[in-house]
Image (cartoon, rainbow, N blue to C red; front, side, top):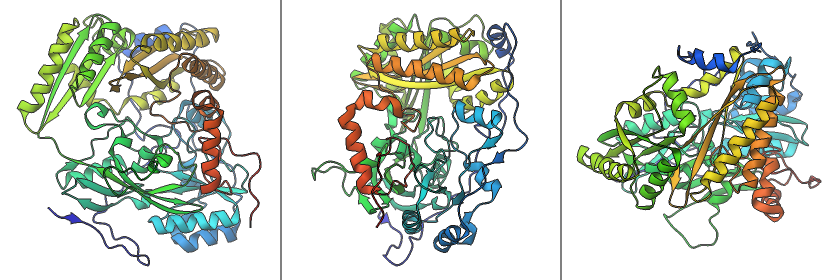
Length: 554
């Protein structure tokens, strides 16, 4: 079939091929909009964490926001380029743009009397309006925080003014649309504010899928995926999001960029890489062209139990290096296996380390052939089959666990995650170092933590480690987690892991970035920012610390 491309000229906005159903945002003080129910079996686990006095943290009835300091003439100038209804200082709208969804974010929304809010929320409809907003903000000294789904867990979308006199949240939800579809090359172009479910809705109606399903899928946007180098749960089958990006359109304060015109090129360094992972510090991703696939006709499932994590990791390594490609591949350590079994009401049936996998194909035979190839490798490493049910159960609940943090906080329990990655050879050392750092830090605060870990993204040279920490909240919960996260982050650096595999840098990981990329690496990023964002209006403090002296305005 021929490519379908919308009208596009320098004077007219792009007419989308299709516009998706609007998607709701999560609550201002929780991950989603529906409270998560704590499984009955989890009460036994909670009881072991709370031997003494619990410190539950109740929700606030309504937030008290910092007053807007954006002058009326600035708001009018912004409204002139996006429309009066798309530039607002309304508290109900500002409330939904307070920042991300990390534990410190959610704790502040429950503990602090005053909530730091953007001075206005501006919602452009397309790339031309985004560029116009950046021109106004550059001229008037207004900081811009690009805002997709608001699911950052590393301080990536906090409403920080920096050196500017005001800050806006640049809400990209109105850009949600399918803008172009090339069914010959299997490429689709979306407005950057299109969420994961919206992209699947628009592609699914035509028989295609993007196949990118991170835990933030229900809320996060495609622009956010690209800006944070997201890695979806089906990364073994489909690749990370940066593997799926064919082209980007970017609006920066210095001008617009149109990057990526062929599947491969030797025309110098790939400038798309400047913006994949840039977190809005250099500019705004306005359009993303991604590789798509036909919706698979068949899916197979299988779970296994390994005697220990070392056996499971060895099997994962061999299967990956041999090129066996299930769609999803996950391995829980012994602690996570036991806790998940208890949460599901299976207190005695699960031992060792649980692995789950899914397999997609154009036919059932194709999916099952990959399953059988993986099964042969796993059995050679001592695995025993657990059938399909654990894999199907994982898939049913794969987007629900972040909301459990809110429910646990209600009863005085801290639950948070962090992630890293390293080589196969270094995996045991890194896991032991991070587990020890988290355990020691939280134990020093007088709690009895549980540290869980799993592998969920694999490569020929190594894998990710994803940690979940559960502990009783103390009477100073924000400091409790800040100390534990710092201890874990330092341990990651000392053990040669990356400070982040897919959560991004944001503001929370910025203090540890220089240890990973070196002082010269940080200066390179600052140099890029100085060219593309000469007045420092883009997401101040995210990714790189701003230069000490901003350039004078013309």
